[in-house]
Length: 62
Image 1: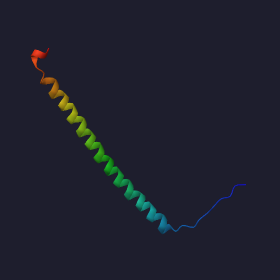
Image 2 (image 1 turned 90 degrees about the vertical axis):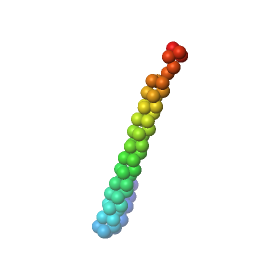
Image 3 (image 1 turned 135 degrees about the horizontal axis):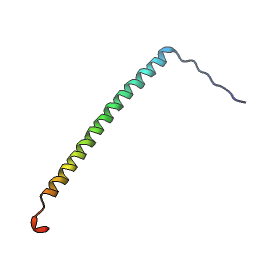
Image 4 (image 1 turned 180 degrees about the horizontal axis):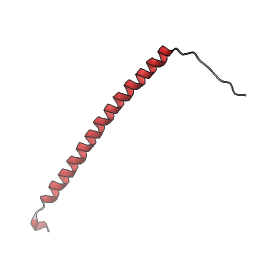
């Protein structure tokens, strides 16, 4: 036998939760954007460093 539980929640409380969820979502999206920007910078930096190292080879080493 399945028992269903119910609870009474006011519209005000639901709206408060909705506001909190939206605010948290915006915060996390902003934080993710910062992380992606930093990762892109690191990728570019690594790529440039590898290119600089490969162009600075000594011809006598060949």
